[in-house]
Image 1 (cartoon, one colour):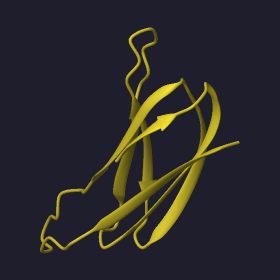
Image 2 (cartoon, rainbow, N blue to C red):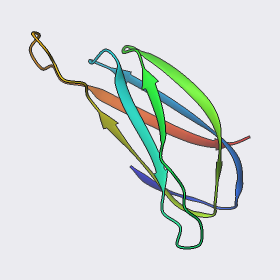
Image 3 (tube, helix red, strand yellow):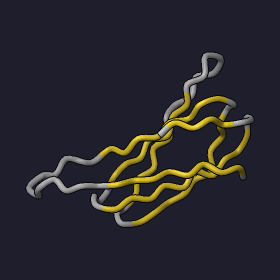
Image 4 (cartoon, helix red, strand yellow):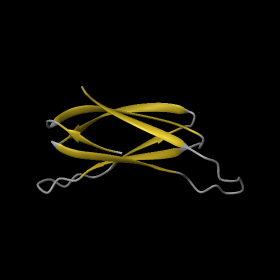
Length: 86
């Protein structure tokens, strides 16, 4: 997912997923003027979480990362992220 942030400021990032316990969702932003480290949200699936973060104007992206399955088989997982102004 990639979306554009219209203005710098505080934004609430809400993330939800189903299908994979302890999934991690990473939110990152590329900005040539500022070094921005990715924000990691851990979600107990099924479930949701939210966090207020500071974003700069420009594009923001998110991706879902699944933990190693260990002794259990891989299953399908779906995640979603919503960024709203605070």
